[in-house]
Image 1: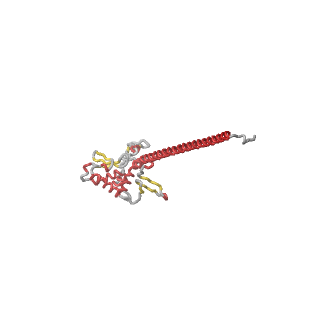
Image 2: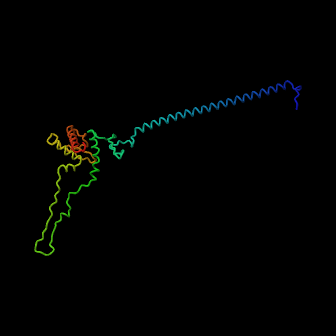
Length: 255
C-alpha cells in the first residue's frame, strides 16, 4: 500500500500530529508517575531503615544498662571462692611447705602480734589432736587384784597360805612432766595463777579454761567471757596477756 501525499488533506495531518502529541504526553505522564512512585518507595524504604536503626540503638542501650546493673549486683554478692583463708599450708618448691596466715606468707622471725595470732589459730586444732590420742588407763587390771591362793599338792597339816597383792600405786611424775601433759590453755592458766597469787587480782577468782570449739574462755567468778577482749577490767586483761607472753617465752620452742 502506497501513501499518496497528494490526496492527504490538512485535517488528516492535524489529526496525525494531535495523536502523536497525545502519545508523547501520555508517555511523559506515565514516566513521571513511575518516577514519583519509585521515589515514594525509596523514601518509604529509607524511613523503614532509619526506624530499624533507631530501634536497634534503643535495644543496644537497654542491653548496656542491664549489663551494668548485672555487674553492679554481682559486685555486691559475696563470692564463695573469695572466702578469707586464716591458715593455709601449701607445697612449695623442693617439697618445702609454704604457710600463709591471714592471706600473708608466714616467715621467721615472727613479731609478738603474729606469734600470738598463730597460737590462737593453732589452738583450734586441739580438739582433733587431743581427741585422737589414747590416754593409757591408770586403773590396774582386775585380774591382778584377784587373791593368789597356793594349795599344796598333797594333803598336809600345814595351813593354806593366802596372799593378796599390794594395791598398785600410781607412778609418781614430777611437776614438769605433769605440766607438759596439760593442754595449752591449762598451762597458761597455771602461769596466770602463779602471777596473780598474793596480788589484788587473786580474790576475783580468775581462771582460763578450754572452749568447746577451741581457743580459751575466761572465768571471773561465776561470769564467763568468750575472749580476752570481752573482759571489761583492763588490769585483768593485762594480767592474762602477760601470762600468755611468759608462757610463750618459756614453753614455746623458738620463741
